[in-house]
Amino acid sequence: MTETAHWWKKSVIYQIYPRSFCDSNGDGVGDIPGIISRLDYLKALGIDVIWLSPIFRSPQDDNGYDVSDYRDIDLLFGTLEDVRELFAQAKRRGIKIMLDMVLNHTSDEHPWFLEARQSRDNPKHDWYIWRDGVPGTPPTDMISTFGGSAWQWVPECGQYYLHQFSVKQPDLNWKNPEVRHALYDMINWWTEQGAGGYRFDAIESIAKIPEAGIVEEGPMLHEYVKELSAATLQGKNLVTVGEAWSANIERAKRWSNPDGSELSMVFQFQHIIQDEIPGGNKWDRRPLYLPELKKVIGAWQRGLRGCGWNSLFWENHDLPRIVSRWGNDKEYRETSAKMLATLLFGLQGTPYIYQGQELGMTNTDYPLSDYRDIELCNMAKERLAAGWPEKTVMELIHAKGRDNARTPMQWSNARNAGFTSGEPWLRVNPNYVQINVENEEKQPDSVLNYYKKLISLRRENDVFFDGDYTAISEEREDIFAYRRENGRSVLTVAANFTGRPVLIPELEYHTRGDLLICNYPTAEVCDQLRPYEARMYLATAQTE
Ligand code: TEU
Image 1 (cartoon, rainbow, N blue to C red):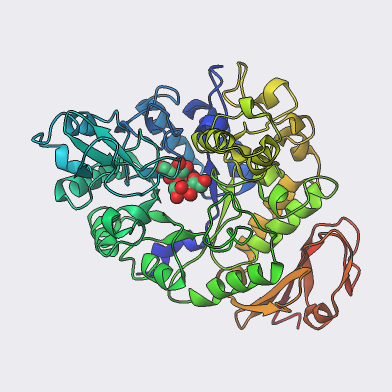
Image 2: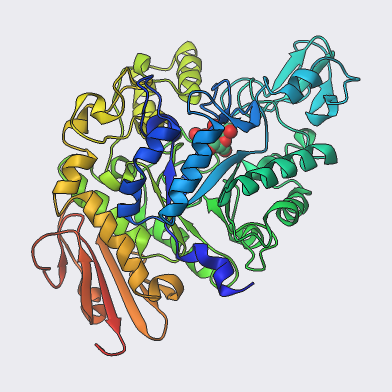
Protein backbone atom coordinates (compact mmCIF):
# COMPACT_ATOMS: atom_id res chain seq x y z
CA MET A 1 0.00 0.00 0.00
CA THR A 2 1.36 3.36 -0.95
CA GLU A 3 0.98 6.44 1.19
CA THR A 4 -1.53 8.01 -1.24
CA ALA A 5 -3.68 4.92 -0.94
CA HIS A 6 -4.19 5.98 2.67
CA TRP A 7 -5.33 9.52 1.84
CA TRP A 8 -8.27 9.13 4.24
CA LYS A 9 -5.88 9.16 7.20
CA LYS A 10 -5.61 12.89 6.73
CA SER A 11 -9.30 13.49 6.04
CA VAL A 12 -12.15 14.83 8.10
CA ILE A 13 -15.50 13.13 7.50
CA TYR A 14 -18.90 14.78 7.95
CA GLN A 15 -22.02 12.68 8.47
CA ILE A 16 -25.27 13.79 6.88
CA TYR A 17 -28.55 12.29 8.03
CA PRO A 18 -30.41 13.19 4.81
CA ARG A 19 -33.89 13.25 6.28
CA SER A 20 -32.88 16.01 8.72
CA PHE A 21 -30.31 18.04 6.81
CA CYS A 22 -32.02 20.35 4.33
CA ASP A 23 -35.42 20.16 2.65
CA SER A 24 -35.62 21.73 -0.82
CA ASN A 25 -39.25 20.93 -1.74
CA GLY A 26 -41.22 21.72 1.41
CA ASP A 27 -42.39 18.17 2.19
CA GLY A 28 -40.77 18.35 5.62
CA VAL A 29 -38.07 15.77 4.82
CA GLY A 30 -34.51 16.65 3.84
CA ASP A 31 -33.42 15.65 0.32
CA ILE A 32 -30.52 15.42 -2.14
CA PRO A 33 -31.09 18.81 -3.80
CA GLY A 34 -31.09 20.25 -0.27
CA ILE A 35 -27.68 18.69 0.35
CA ILE A 36 -26.35 20.06 -2.95
CA SER A 37 -27.48 23.53 -1.89
CA ARG A 38 -25.33 23.26 1.26
CA LEU A 39 -22.12 21.91 -0.28
CA ASP A 40 -20.49 25.32 -0.10
CA TYR A 41 -21.17 25.39 3.62
CA LEU A 42 -19.40 22.03 3.99
CA LYS A 43 -16.54 23.14 1.77
CA ALA A 44 -16.05 26.23 3.93
CA LEU A 45 -16.08 24.03 7.04
CA GLY A 46 -13.14 22.20 5.50
CA ILE A 47 -14.31 18.59 5.40
CA ASP A 48 -13.10 16.08 2.80
CA VAL A 49 -15.71 13.34 2.81
CA ILE A 50 -19.45 13.17 3.39
CA TRP A 51 -20.89 10.00 4.91
CA LEU A 52 -24.47 9.93 3.73
CA SER A 53 -26.88 7.84 5.80
CA PRO A 54 -29.04 5.64 3.51
CA ILE A 55 -30.83 7.31 0.61
CA PHE A 56 -31.97 4.14 -1.15
CA ARG A 57 -35.58 3.08 -1.80
CA SER A 58 -37.10 2.19 1.51
CA PRO A 59 -40.43 1.94 3.33
CA GLN A 60 -38.64 4.05 6.00
CA ASP A 61 -39.53 1.78 8.89
CA ASP A 62 -36.06 2.53 10.30
CA ASN A 63 -35.45 5.76 8.37
CA GLY A 64 -33.81 4.13 5.38
CA TYR A 65 -31.88 1.38 7.19
CA ASP A 66 -34.51 -0.91 5.67
CA VAL A 67 -33.66 -0.96 1.96
CA SER A 68 -36.12 -2.20 -0.67
CA ASP A 69 -33.98 -1.29 -3.71
CA TYR A 70 -30.23 -0.70 -3.39
CA ARG A 71 -29.94 0.65 -6.91
CA ASP A 72 -32.52 3.39 -6.71
CA ILE A 73 -33.14 6.46 -4.56
CA ASP A 74 -36.11 6.88 -2.29
CA LEU A 75 -38.58 9.37 -3.73
CA LEU A 76 -38.45 11.25 -0.44
CA PHE A 77 -34.83 12.14 -1.14
CA GLY A 78 -34.88 12.59 -4.91
CA THR A 79 -33.74 10.62 -7.94
CA LEU A 80 -30.67 8.84 -9.27
CA GLU A 81 -30.09 11.90 -11.40
CA ASP A 82 -29.98 14.05 -8.25
CA VAL A 83 -27.39 11.72 -6.75
CA ARG A 84 -25.25 11.85 -9.89
CA GLU A 85 -25.47 15.64 -9.65
CA LEU A 86 -24.48 15.45 -5.97
CA PHE A 87 -21.43 13.33 -6.86
CA ALA A 88 -20.45 15.80 -9.58
CA GLN A 89 -20.98 18.92 -7.47
CA ALA A 90 -19.13 17.41 -4.53
CA LYS A 91 -16.24 16.34 -6.77
CA ARG A 92 -15.93 19.88 -8.08
CA ARG A 93 -15.33 20.94 -4.47
CA GLY A 94 -12.89 18.12 -3.76
CA ILE A 95 -15.37 16.28 -1.56
CA LYS A 96 -16.00 12.53 -1.76
CA ILE A 97 -19.28 10.83 -0.93
CA MET A 98 -19.34 7.75 1.26
CA LEU A 99 -22.56 5.72 0.98
CA ASP A 100 -24.12 3.82 3.86
CA MET A 101 -24.42 0.16 2.87
CA VAL A 102 -26.90 -1.90 4.85
CA LEU A 103 -25.81 -5.45 4.06
CA ASN A 104 -26.90 -7.30 7.19
CA HIS A 105 -30.57 -7.12 6.26
CA THR A 106 -33.01 -5.73 3.69
CA SER A 107 -36.51 -4.39 3.99
CA ASP A 108 -39.27 -7.00 4.05
CA GLU A 109 -40.51 -5.14 0.96
CA HIS A 110 -37.33 -5.86 -1.02
CA PRO A 111 -38.21 -8.03 -4.06
CA TRP A 112 -35.72 -10.65 -2.77
CA PHE A 113 -37.70 -11.05 0.43
CA LEU A 114 -41.09 -10.85 -1.27
CA GLU A 115 -39.99 -13.88 -3.28
CA ALA A 116 -38.24 -15.60 -0.40
CA ARG A 117 -41.33 -15.61 1.77
CA GLN A 118 -43.57 -17.15 -0.89
CA SER A 119 -42.50 -20.74 -0.27
CA ARG A 120 -39.65 -22.92 0.91
CA ASP A 121 -38.97 -23.88 -2.74
CA ASN A 122 -38.58 -20.37 -4.00
CA PRO A 123 -35.07 -19.81 -5.39
CA LYS A 124 -34.70 -16.74 -3.16
CA HIS A 125 -35.89 -18.52 -0.02
CA ASP A 126 -32.38 -19.37 1.16
CA TRP A 127 -31.31 -15.71 0.80
CA TYR A 128 -32.71 -15.10 4.29
CA ILE A 129 -32.38 -16.95 7.59
CA TRP A 130 -35.24 -19.39 8.25
CA ARG A 131 -35.95 -21.96 10.93
CA ASP A 132 -38.68 -24.53 11.24
CA GLY A 133 -41.00 -24.38 14.20
CA VAL A 134 -44.53 -23.94 15.37
CA PRO A 135 -46.39 -20.68 15.79
CA GLY A 136 -45.89 -19.16 19.23
CA THR A 137 -42.60 -20.94 19.95
CA PRO A 138 -39.68 -19.11 18.32
CA PRO A 139 -36.60 -21.25 17.58
CA THR A 140 -34.36 -19.31 20.01
CA ASP A 141 -34.94 -16.66 22.65
CA MET A 142 -32.98 -14.05 20.69
CA ILE A 143 -34.42 -10.55 21.19
CA SER A 144 -34.58 -7.93 18.44
CA THR A 145 -32.67 -4.69 19.05
CA PHE A 146 -35.95 -2.82 18.70
CA GLY A 147 -37.86 -5.05 21.12
CA GLY A 148 -39.67 -8.40 21.08
CA SER A 149 -38.55 -11.72 19.61
CA ALA A 150 -36.07 -11.62 16.73
CA TRP A 151 -38.09 -14.35 14.96
CA GLN A 152 -41.19 -13.80 12.85
CA TRP A 153 -43.56 -16.57 11.79
CA VAL A 154 -44.52 -16.86 8.12
CA PRO A 155 -47.47 -19.23 7.65
CA GLU A 156 -46.85 -19.68 3.87
CA CYS A 157 -43.53 -21.33 4.66
CA GLY A 158 -44.34 -22.79 8.07
CA GLN A 159 -41.11 -21.18 9.22
CA TYR A 160 -39.69 -18.27 11.14
CA TYR A 161 -37.34 -15.69 9.66
CA LEU A 162 -34.70 -13.89 11.68
CA HIS A 163 -34.72 -10.12 12.14
CA GLN A 164 -32.02 -8.71 14.38
CA PHE A 165 -33.65 -5.28 14.06
CA SER A 166 -37.31 -4.50 13.27
CA VAL A 167 -39.72 -7.10 11.94
CA LYS A 168 -39.49 -5.18 8.64
CA GLN A 169 -35.71 -5.81 8.47
CA PRO A 170 -35.18 -9.53 7.70
CA ASP A 171 -31.54 -10.68 8.00
CA LEU A 172 -29.77 -11.77 4.84
CA ASN A 173 -28.16 -15.21 4.74
CA TRP A 174 -24.48 -14.51 4.08
CA LYS A 175 -23.76 -18.26 3.94
CA ASN A 176 -25.34 -18.23 0.52
CA PRO A 177 -22.73 -17.13 -2.07
CA GLU A 178 -25.46 -15.80 -4.39
CA VAL A 179 -26.41 -13.28 -1.70
CA ARG A 180 -22.83 -12.14 -1.23
CA HIS A 181 -22.21 -11.75 -4.94
CA ALA A 182 -25.46 -9.86 -5.52
CA LEU A 183 -24.34 -7.40 -2.84
CA TYR A 184 -20.82 -7.13 -4.30
CA ASP A 185 -22.22 -6.41 -7.78
CA MET A 186 -24.40 -3.71 -6.33
CA ILE A 187 -21.46 -2.06 -4.53
CA ASN A 188 -19.35 -2.17 -7.69
CA TRP A 189 -22.19 -0.53 -9.55
CA TRP A 190 -22.24 2.31 -7.01
CA THR A 191 -18.48 2.73 -7.31
CA GLU A 192 -18.96 3.08 -11.06
CA GLN A 193 -21.58 5.75 -10.40
CA GLY A 194 -18.96 7.73 -8.48
CA ALA A 195 -19.22 6.76 -4.81
CA GLY A 196 -15.98 7.55 -2.97
CA GLY A 197 -16.37 5.09 -0.14
CA TYR A 198 -18.69 3.11 2.06
CA ARG A 199 -19.85 2.83 5.62
CA PHE A 200 -20.96 -0.73 6.32
CA ASP A 201 -23.92 -0.85 8.66
CA ALA A 202 -23.97 -3.53 11.39
CA ILE A 203 -21.28 -5.39 9.42
CA GLU A 204 -20.09 -7.30 12.49
CA SER A 205 -23.39 -9.23 12.51
CA ILE A 206 -23.37 -10.75 9.01
CA ALA A 207 -21.93 -14.11 10.15
CA LYS A 208 -24.26 -14.76 13.06
CA ILE A 209 -25.15 -18.21 14.40
CA PRO A 210 -28.48 -17.74 16.22
CA GLU A 211 -28.49 -21.19 17.87
CA ALA A 212 -25.08 -20.54 19.44
CA GLY A 213 -26.10 -17.08 20.63
CA ILE A 214 -23.40 -15.62 18.36
CA VAL A 215 -24.49 -12.40 16.72
CA GLU A 216 -21.32 -10.39 16.27
CA GLU A 217 -17.96 -11.75 15.15
CA GLY A 218 -19.22 -15.14 13.97
CA PRO A 219 -16.41 -17.51 12.91
CA MET A 220 -16.84 -16.70 9.20
CA LEU A 221 -17.01 -12.92 9.65
CA HIS A 222 -13.54 -11.93 8.57
CA GLU A 223 -13.54 -14.35 5.66
CA TYR A 224 -16.66 -12.67 4.35
CA VAL A 225 -15.23 -9.21 4.91
CA LYS A 226 -12.00 -10.16 3.13
CA GLU A 227 -14.01 -11.51 0.24
CA LEU A 228 -16.12 -8.33 0.13
CA SER A 229 -12.99 -6.22 0.21
CA ALA A 230 -11.28 -8.15 -2.59
CA ALA A 231 -14.42 -8.15 -4.73
CA THR A 232 -15.33 -4.50 -4.34
CA LEU A 233 -12.85 -2.29 -2.53
CA GLN A 234 -9.22 -3.05 -3.21
CA GLY A 235 -7.25 -0.90 -5.59
CA LYS A 236 -10.01 1.66 -5.92
CA ASN A 237 -8.86 4.36 -3.52
CA LEU A 238 -12.05 4.15 -1.51
CA VAL A 239 -12.49 5.02 2.16
CA THR A 240 -14.40 2.46 4.18
CA VAL A 241 -15.60 2.14 7.74
CA GLY A 242 -17.47 -0.69 9.39
CA GLU A 243 -19.85 -0.30 12.28
CA ALA A 244 -18.59 -2.72 14.94
CA TRP A 245 -19.94 -2.33 18.46
CA SER A 246 -18.14 -5.53 19.44
CA ALA A 247 -14.72 -4.36 18.25
CA ASN A 248 -11.93 -4.51 20.78
CA ILE A 249 -8.36 -3.53 19.92
CA GLU A 250 -7.35 -7.00 18.69
CA ARG A 251 -10.39 -7.26 16.43
CA ALA A 252 -9.93 -3.71 15.17
CA LYS A 253 -6.41 -4.61 14.02
CA ARG A 254 -7.96 -7.10 11.63
CA TRP A 255 -10.74 -4.77 10.50
CA SER A 256 -8.31 -1.93 9.78
CA ASN A 257 -5.21 -3.89 8.79
CA PRO A 258 -2.95 -1.43 6.89
CA ASP A 259 -2.46 -4.08 4.19
CA GLY A 260 -5.96 -3.15 3.03
CA SER A 261 -7.29 -6.70 3.24
CA GLU A 262 -10.45 -5.59 5.06
CA LEU A 263 -11.58 -1.97 5.64
CA SER A 264 -9.93 1.41 6.24
CA MET A 265 -11.23 1.56 9.82
CA VAL A 266 -14.13 0.65 12.10
CA PHE A 267 -16.36 2.59 14.41
CA GLN A 268 -15.29 1.21 17.75
CA PHE A 269 -17.65 2.09 20.56
CA GLN A 270 -15.74 1.23 23.72
CA HIS A 271 -15.13 4.88 24.58
CA ILE A 272 -18.68 6.06 24.01
CA ILE A 273 -20.30 3.39 26.20
CA GLN A 274 -18.31 4.44 29.27
CA ASP A 275 -21.46 5.93 30.80
CA GLU A 276 -23.40 2.69 30.34
CA ILE A 277 -23.52 -0.23 32.78
CA PRO A 278 -21.28 -3.05 31.48
CA GLY A 279 -23.31 -5.97 30.20
CA GLY A 280 -26.47 -3.85 30.08
CA ASN A 281 -27.99 -2.06 27.13
CA LYS A 282 -27.92 1.57 26.02
CA TRP A 283 -30.69 2.56 28.45
CA ASP A 284 -28.74 1.35 31.51
CA ARG A 285 -26.87 4.47 32.49
CA ARG A 286 -24.14 5.22 35.00
CA PRO A 287 -22.07 8.37 35.58
CA LEU A 288 -19.01 8.80 33.40
CA TYR A 289 -15.75 8.15 35.28
CA LEU A 290 -13.16 10.25 33.44
CA PRO A 291 -10.01 8.21 34.28
CA GLU A 292 -11.70 5.14 32.74
CA LEU A 293 -12.59 7.06 29.55
CA LYS A 294 -9.00 8.26 29.24
CA LYS A 295 -7.70 4.74 29.79
CA VAL A 296 -9.88 3.36 27.01
CA ILE A 297 -9.04 6.12 24.53
CA GLY A 298 -5.34 5.86 25.40
CA ALA A 299 -5.37 2.09 24.93
CA TRP A 300 -6.89 2.45 21.45
CA GLN A 301 -4.43 5.21 20.53
CA ARG A 302 -1.46 3.04 21.50
CA GLY A 303 -3.04 -0.26 20.44
CA LEU A 304 -3.68 0.59 16.79
CA ARG A 305 -0.52 2.60 16.28
CA GLY A 306 1.20 1.34 13.15
CA CYS A 307 -1.06 -1.70 12.85
CA GLY A 308 -4.52 -0.27 12.34
CA TRP A 309 -6.38 3.01 12.26
CA ASN A 310 -8.81 4.75 14.61
CA SER A 311 -12.02 6.49 13.72
CA LEU A 312 -12.59 9.43 16.05
CA PHE A 313 -16.15 10.32 16.95
CA TRP A 314 -18.42 11.53 19.73
CA GLU A 315 -21.73 11.52 17.85
CA ASN A 316 -23.73 9.88 15.09
CA HIS A 317 -27.40 9.44 14.21
CA ASP A 318 -27.82 6.75 16.91
CA LEU A 319 -26.14 8.63 19.75
CA PRO A 320 -27.09 11.60 21.91
CA ARG A 321 -25.51 15.01 21.40
CA ILE A 322 -22.09 15.06 23.05
CA VAL A 323 -22.45 18.54 24.57
CA SER A 324 -25.55 17.31 26.42
CA ARG A 325 -23.92 13.99 27.27
CA TRP A 326 -20.44 14.86 28.53
CA GLY A 327 -20.37 18.64 28.38
CA ASN A 328 -22.72 21.19 29.88
CA ASP A 329 -25.46 22.25 27.49
CA LYS A 330 -26.60 25.11 29.74
CA GLU A 331 -24.22 27.86 30.90
CA TYR A 332 -21.10 26.30 29.33
CA ARG A 333 -22.65 25.02 26.12
CA GLU A 334 -20.24 26.71 23.75
CA THR A 335 -17.16 26.29 25.93
CA SER A 336 -17.78 22.62 26.63
CA ALA A 337 -18.71 21.84 23.01
CA LYS A 338 -15.36 23.33 21.97
CA MET A 339 -13.54 21.48 24.74
CA LEU A 340 -14.88 18.13 23.51
CA ALA A 341 -13.97 19.04 19.93
CA THR A 342 -10.41 19.91 20.96
CA LEU A 343 -9.90 16.56 22.66
CA LEU A 344 -11.21 14.63 19.66
CA PHE A 345 -9.26 16.54 17.03
CA GLY A 346 -5.95 16.15 18.87
CA LEU A 347 -6.09 12.34 18.65
CA GLN A 348 -4.65 10.05 16.00
CA GLY A 349 -7.27 8.81 13.57
CA THR A 350 -9.86 10.10 11.15
CA PRO A 351 -12.30 12.52 12.83
CA TYR A 352 -16.02 12.35 12.10
CA ILE A 353 -18.40 15.25 12.67
CA TYR A 354 -22.11 14.48 12.84
CA GLN A 355 -24.31 17.24 11.36
CA GLY A 356 -25.00 19.96 13.91
CA GLN A 357 -22.18 18.84 16.21
CA GLU A 358 -20.16 21.69 14.70
CA LEU A 359 -22.82 24.11 16.03
CA GLY A 360 -22.98 22.57 19.49
CA MET A 361 -26.54 21.32 18.88
CA THR A 362 -28.13 19.79 21.99
CA ASN A 363 -30.47 16.98 23.06
CA THR A 364 -34.23 17.48 23.22
CA ASP A 365 -36.78 17.35 26.04
CA TYR A 366 -39.97 16.76 24.06
CA PRO A 367 -43.11 14.96 25.22
CA LEU A 368 -43.34 11.36 23.96
CA SER A 369 -45.82 12.21 21.19
CA ASP A 370 -43.22 14.42 19.47
CA TYR A 371 -40.73 11.58 18.92
CA ARG A 372 -40.62 9.33 15.84
CA ASP A 373 -37.77 6.82 16.20
CA ILE A 374 -38.82 3.16 16.12
CA GLU A 375 -36.33 2.12 18.83
CA LEU A 376 -37.35 4.93 21.18
CA CYS A 377 -41.10 4.46 20.64
CA ASN A 378 -40.94 0.66 21.08
CA MET A 379 -38.88 1.02 24.25
CA ALA A 380 -41.37 3.50 25.73
CA LYS A 381 -44.33 1.27 24.84
CA GLU A 382 -42.71 -1.82 26.37
CA ARG A 383 -41.56 -0.15 29.55
CA LEU A 384 -44.74 1.83 30.20
CA ALA A 385 -46.75 -1.38 29.72
CA ALA A 386 -44.42 -3.10 32.19
CA GLY A 387 -45.21 -0.44 34.77
CA TRP A 388 -42.14 1.78 34.59
CA PRO A 389 -42.89 5.32 35.85
CA GLU A 390 -43.41 7.71 32.95
CA LYS A 391 -40.92 10.13 34.45
CA THR A 392 -38.13 7.53 34.38
CA VAL A 393 -38.92 6.50 30.81
CA MET A 394 -38.89 10.13 29.66
CA GLU A 395 -35.55 10.71 31.42
CA LEU A 396 -34.06 7.81 29.48
CA ILE A 397 -35.42 9.16 26.19
CA HIS A 398 -34.16 12.67 26.85
CA ALA A 399 -30.72 11.29 27.64
CA LYS A 400 -30.31 8.48 25.11
CA GLY A 401 -33.13 8.47 22.53
CA ARG A 402 -31.90 8.47 18.93
CA ASP A 403 -34.16 11.37 17.95
CA ASN A 404 -31.93 13.67 20.03
CA ALA A 405 -29.50 13.55 17.13
CA ARG A 406 -32.13 13.52 14.41
CA THR A 407 -33.86 16.87 14.91
CA PRO A 408 -33.56 19.08 11.83
CA MET A 409 -30.29 20.88 11.14
CA GLN A 410 -30.46 24.45 12.43
CA TRP A 411 -29.59 26.74 9.53
CA SER A 412 -31.02 30.08 10.67
CA ASN A 413 -33.53 31.66 13.02
CA ALA A 414 -36.20 31.68 10.31
CA ARG A 415 -39.28 29.47 10.81
CA ASN A 416 -38.32 25.80 11.33
CA ALA A 417 -34.66 26.82 11.57
CA GLY A 418 -34.58 27.31 7.79
CA PHE A 419 -34.71 23.53 7.40
CA THR A 420 -38.05 23.37 5.56
CA SER A 421 -40.83 25.62 4.35
CA GLY A 422 -43.31 22.89 5.30
CA GLU A 423 -43.95 20.87 8.44
CA PRO A 424 -40.78 19.09 9.56
CA TRP A 425 -41.06 15.29 10.00
CA LEU A 426 -39.55 15.70 13.48
CA ARG A 427 -39.92 18.82 15.60
CA VAL A 428 -37.13 21.37 15.34
CA ASN A 429 -35.27 21.97 18.62
CA PRO A 430 -36.67 25.31 19.89
CA ASN A 431 -33.16 26.51 20.71
CA TYR A 432 -32.60 27.04 16.96
CA VAL A 433 -33.36 30.70 17.61
CA GLN A 434 -29.89 31.03 19.20
CA ILE A 435 -28.08 27.97 17.86
CA ASN A 436 -27.93 28.12 14.07
CA VAL A 437 -25.48 28.34 11.18
CA GLU A 438 -26.31 31.92 10.23
CA ASN A 439 -25.60 33.22 13.75
CA GLU A 440 -22.49 31.15 14.17
CA GLU A 441 -21.03 32.18 10.84
CA LYS A 442 -21.25 35.78 12.01
CA GLN A 443 -19.70 35.26 15.44
CA PRO A 444 -15.92 34.86 15.26
CA ASP A 445 -15.82 32.84 18.50
CA SER A 446 -18.72 30.48 17.69
CA VAL A 447 -18.52 26.70 17.99
CA LEU A 448 -18.71 26.55 14.19
CA ASN A 449 -15.71 28.81 13.68
CA TYR A 450 -13.83 26.84 16.32
CA TYR A 451 -14.42 23.61 14.37
CA LYS A 452 -13.21 25.33 11.20
CA LYS A 453 -10.03 26.30 12.96
CA LEU A 454 -9.45 22.81 14.36
CA ILE A 455 -9.93 21.28 10.92
CA SER A 456 -7.44 23.64 9.34
CA LEU A 457 -4.92 23.11 12.16
CA ARG A 458 -4.90 19.38 11.45
CA ARG A 459 -3.72 20.14 7.93
CA GLU A 460 -0.84 22.31 9.06
CA ASN A 461 1.21 19.86 11.08
CA ASP A 462 1.94 16.18 10.58
CA VAL A 463 2.07 15.55 14.30
CA PHE A 464 -1.74 15.24 14.23
CA PHE A 465 -1.35 12.42 11.74
CA ASP A 466 1.62 10.47 13.07
CA GLY A 467 2.45 11.69 16.60
CA ASP A 468 2.82 9.10 19.37
CA TYR A 469 0.21 9.33 22.15
CA THR A 470 1.20 9.74 25.79
CA ALA A 471 -1.34 10.37 28.52
CA ILE A 472 -0.74 13.14 31.06
CA SER A 473 -2.06 12.46 34.57
CA GLU A 474 -4.41 9.74 33.38
CA GLU A 475 -5.63 9.12 36.94
CA ARG A 476 -7.00 12.64 37.45
CA GLU A 477 -10.80 12.86 37.58
CA ASP A 478 -11.06 16.46 36.40
CA ILE A 479 -8.76 16.95 33.41
CA PHE A 480 -8.15 15.14 30.13
CA ALA A 481 -4.64 15.84 28.86
CA TYR A 482 -2.21 14.15 26.50
CA ARG A 483 0.80 14.69 24.32
CA ARG A 484 1.52 13.66 20.74
CA GLU A 485 5.13 13.51 19.52
CA ASN A 486 6.71 12.60 16.20
CA GLY A 487 10.33 13.60 16.68
CA ARG A 488 9.83 16.95 14.99
CA SER A 489 6.94 18.39 16.97
CA VAL A 490 5.20 17.99 20.28
CA LEU A 491 1.48 18.65 20.49
CA THR A 492 0.02 19.08 23.96
CA VAL A 493 -3.72 18.98 24.55
CA ALA A 494 -5.23 19.78 27.93
CA ALA A 495 -8.88 20.11 28.87
CA ASN A 496 -10.88 20.71 31.99
CA PHE A 497 -13.82 18.28 32.04
CA THR A 498 -15.54 20.12 34.92
CA GLY A 499 -17.44 23.35 35.53
CA ARG A 500 -14.91 24.65 38.08
CA PRO A 501 -11.37 25.95 37.76
CA VAL A 502 -8.65 23.33 38.26
CA LEU A 503 -4.92 23.54 38.84
CA ILE A 504 -2.65 21.89 36.32
CA PRO A 505 0.91 21.94 37.64
CA GLU A 506 1.79 19.12 35.24
CA LEU A 507 1.06 21.32 32.26
CA GLU A 508 3.80 23.80 33.03
CA TYR A 509 6.49 21.35 32.05
CA HIS A 510 4.75 20.55 28.80
CA THR A 511 3.68 24.04 27.84
CA ARG A 512 6.73 24.90 25.82
CA GLY A 513 5.66 25.98 22.40
CA ASP A 514 2.88 28.08 20.93
CA LEU A 515 -0.72 28.12 21.95
CA LEU A 516 -2.46 26.83 18.82
CA ILE A 517 -6.04 27.14 19.96
CA CYS A 518 -8.00 27.78 23.16
CA ASN A 519 -11.73 27.94 23.82
CA TYR A 520 -11.52 31.11 25.96
CA PRO A 521 -11.18 34.52 24.31
CA THR A 522 -8.83 35.93 26.94
CA ALA A 523 -5.20 34.97 27.57
CA GLU A 524 -4.54 31.69 29.36
CA VAL A 525 -3.91 31.44 33.06
CA CYS A 526 -0.71 29.42 33.18
CA ASP A 527 -1.23 26.85 35.92
CA GLN A 528 -4.98 26.77 35.86
CA LEU A 529 -7.75 25.65 33.53
CA ARG A 530 -10.98 27.60 33.71
CA PRO A 531 -14.36 25.74 33.59
CA TYR A 532 -14.31 23.45 30.53
CA GLU A 533 -11.22 25.22 29.23
CA ALA A 534 -9.26 23.42 26.52
CA ARG A 535 -5.89 24.28 25.02
CA MET A 536 -3.62 22.92 22.35
CA TYR A 537 0.07 23.79 22.25
CA LEU A 538 2.60 23.02 19.57
CA ALA A 539 6.32 22.94 20.07
CA THR A 540 8.46 22.38 16.98
CA ALA A 541 12.16 21.71 16.63
CA GLN A 542 12.79 25.43 16.05
CA THR A 543 10.75 26.78 18.97
CA GLU A 544 12.15 24.30 21.48
O1 TEU B 1 -27.02 0.32 14.02
C1 TEU B 1 -26.64 -0.97 14.44
C2 TEU B 1 -26.76 -1.18 15.85
O2 TEU B 1 -26.05 -2.01 16.40
C3 TEU B 1 -27.90 -0.53 16.57
O3 TEU B 1 -28.48 -1.51 17.33
C4 TEU B 1 -27.48 0.49 17.48
O4 TEU B 1 -26.94 -0.19 18.57
C5 TEU B 1 -28.68 1.28 17.94
O5 TEU B 1 -29.08 2.13 16.91
C6 TEU B 1 -28.35 2.07 19.17
O6 TEU B 1 -29.46 2.77 19.58
C7 TEU B 1 -27.18 0.51 12.67
C8 TEU B 1 -27.62 1.91 12.34
O7 TEU B 1 -26.63 2.82 12.71
C9 TEU B 1 -28.95 2.17 12.98
O8 TEU B 1 -29.39 3.48 12.74
C10 TEU B 1 -29.93 1.18 12.40
O9 TEU B 1 -31.16 1.31 13.05
C11 TEU B 1 -29.44 -0.26 12.54
O10 TEU B 1 -28.10 -0.41 12.12
C12 TEU B 1 -30.26 -1.18 11.67
O11 TEU B 1 -29.91 -1.01 10.33
